[in-house]
Length: 342
Ligand SMILES: O=C(O)CCC(=O)C(=O)O
Image (cartoon, rainbow, N blue to C red; front, side, top):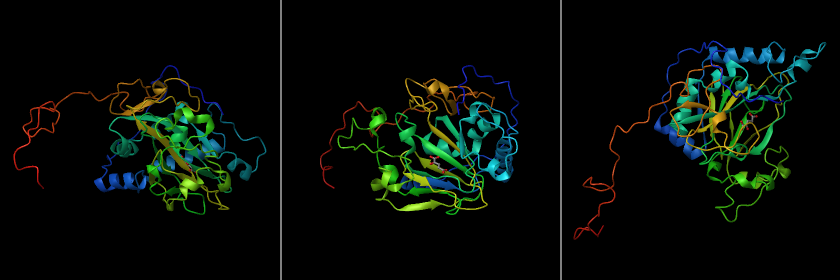
């Protein structure tokens, strides 16, 4: 479906009713876990009131009670099963529905993103997964293959709306694979590190659920795989290089709904904008936290975020120097007699 790109922000077109939240403070341990594993699960980050609001909203979408470009009401006479199995996932609704913008800019999600890849945060993408019983999985891939940011600071935030486990098609992550480069295919060499890593192979079939046809499989196999088993309200944060996948929803009755957003550091440059590349695209994406020297978009529906009140950059502290006498980094460090032995 084609979602239009806004050219003029219209901050008055919907009232913003987002609540006040208790800020979430990320610990050193969580930061280290994210860096060393490639992902971090924050339990209960989203409260059940918000989860309920999003679940009600997905039902409104399924039953055609929400109108937005690309969303069709179910054909007359559809059975309940046909209605519930129409959508696997829907992209970029934050450009046309206020509730998606609000959850993309959820303060507690941004608190974590800011701590992990900030302090300046650009909000790029949203996806609403419905993944009904029988819904398809997605084979091994690296998100930065699809959403290149330079320098690469991409991070996904996967909000569980239903409990998710091996049965209904949770995320699976290869622990430690975030240290791998992004593996390009023949069509996307321009975004890869092939110019700096001389022996980086081209890899076809990212996201293919057939393992023998997914060229990332041999790389993935070097790392231990774990299921990201979560309860509704938990959020999985995963870096853009980490190799991950999900399997088909094998349950007969359980949905696996999730609200997924992608962000990068707002000082990174990107040409990504809902699939079409070609020239700078930062100005399409919302400044969620901090500030940036690069262009950015305002929130279309007025959700409070840094774009509406960017942080003022100012030097309040003198930069540190490695020189012991504090005279500045251009000074000469003199070798004192007798200090050259350990
Ligand atoms: O939730 C899923 O099934 C896949 C999600 C995913 O791979 C992603 O958000 O990058």
